[in-house]
Length: 82
Image (cartoon, rainbow, N blue to C red; front, side, top):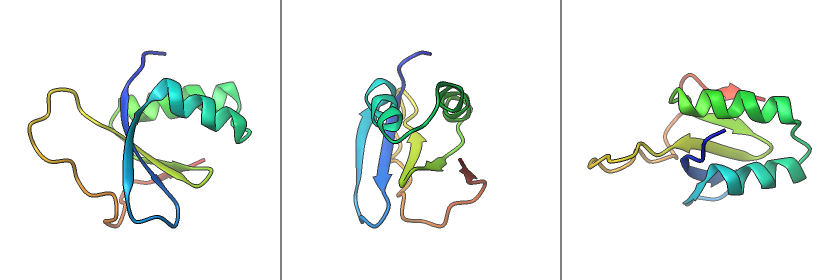
């Protein structure tokens, strides 16, 4: 799996942080996410889907984007929960 830039919001917090796939996958492994679930999450994130799992909302930051990122406190449509 390639490393991708992510914006992550923790449930119950009003702010988000930027991180990468390798860092968040280690965190998700500690939160009992299986390797097959990680592959599925990575595939969805690469496709541009915002995903919520184990108290974290994850969204891919598009490389080279000059536009400000969409705030993650807006209602989430097309949300995939695992």
